[in-house]
Image (cartoon, rainbow over all chains, first blue to last red):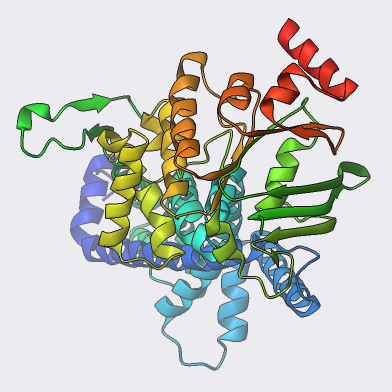
Length: 257
Length: 244
């Protein structure tokens, strides 16, 4: 065994333990993906709630209620951004889920979602407040309510603008699921360590893991970039009234971003 | 009964009193130009009428009803009093057509096909029918402002407020927007126009209001304001304006 070269050892590990790596990939991707989506939804709710405008003309009950909800939101964000996910995982799994018969992967999904939600809430709030006030005023001026303005005008633009940050969160989640090995989630890092153990091929096994992590994150960023382009829509537009005459279909390209 | 009536309207931002005591009544079909130096409170007055700013005192009546009453349906009121902004404020995520449709569907609860029909009509009225598929980013300033006017028209407003509609435009685009506004004035829309375009104030409007330091200094016909102003401050403003 000790006469094998680095690449021979890598190949040996792959041949021997590929089911471990594949399960690791599946668990990692499943938790990262569902956790990012759920975290986005949590963040959307928290971010939207935090940006509800109030004025001194609102009723005292509405203002008091909002103040309480806002306090809870801020506390949630600060606590989950301010502590490591590894500790959160341990505390939640060994503390809150103690004595509950819960699937480890569901626990992992819950932990990643709550953790991501805290970051997403701030990303979404940033996206909302970055949209020009004129957009809101334009909507209000034709009678649209705050809710209609948010759903039709502000959020579509805000979410488009924060897509790169959402992509960041997804990539971070793919990598950071590795800390969930503390509660025994069979994700990619956990599996790589198992594969390394028997023959003490730590360097080789973790090199495989590193390559896999990179391929996963790189693929995800490419896909997200495609989605962004899709959201931007076509760069040109069709002059109206050209259906009967194809020659009249002039495409004007003013080169949107 | 006047369409819009301001009674002792006041607005302060903190310590700063922007509108002091504005009383004004606007009849149906009147086209009023509001002129005055920057910071005189012209835009704030318009924004108060649309309730984008909440007045600090006084009252605003729309067809005789006080719009600051608790029971007012704000959406319904705003749909009836359109507003056109200096910076256009078109919805960047929508095409020209969608910009004119969304308010009709969400606020007036019109059916989508009916709303699109109306949107095409108003866009054609401002000469933008060709561009219904274009996003605001793909349009010039003058085109954007015309779409913004169409968006307001689509709501069938009883009055339209214009907040310096040509101030952000390149000089060669001012004409196309003023042209559209003139055609609206000719067809009987009630309009209040905050403007620096003295030719519009003189030729199109049938009343001119000169504001200074949060009060209405002079309120008269264009011929009186421009040829024979009674107040020294109006004279001073106009002479400074036309000398440069």
